[in-house]
Length: 196
Image (cartoon, rainbow, N blue to C red; front, top):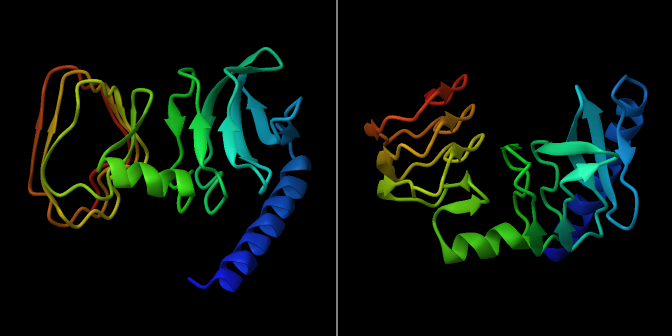
């Protein structure tokens, strides 16, 4: 993508984010700006904080474990997609990271060069580059939303007993995935986790 197109896309995404903030501001559980210099947008619902996005100028993302006394437990899908984020620090209180939350960011591109499985804390966030027979590390407890979505090169997956949750659409549209093995420990398989 040309640099001018990237700038246009970034500008459009900023405008869309602003419109989303305006619309969400009109409904209960409204989006709020976090205190301090964090430049984060968030909602509080049922006593938990969901990070909705942030300033397009963010290059370092440090999410606090609590905002206004409420635990931060999730990051919305596409929350920081196409942003300039180069480094992240996410608290262990976050148990759900939406699909494409860091899509097309410098951080994710760098992480995928280092490993075909990108793990944030104990969440397997991205396995889009995994190939052949894949063994999930025992450090993983959650296979995140859309983690392998659309992977066309993975043929087999081994899921250890440490994994207790496979979130929605985790293995969706993995056309070549023909075999999977699970150890004891898996408690939750969310909707469309293996939909083709």
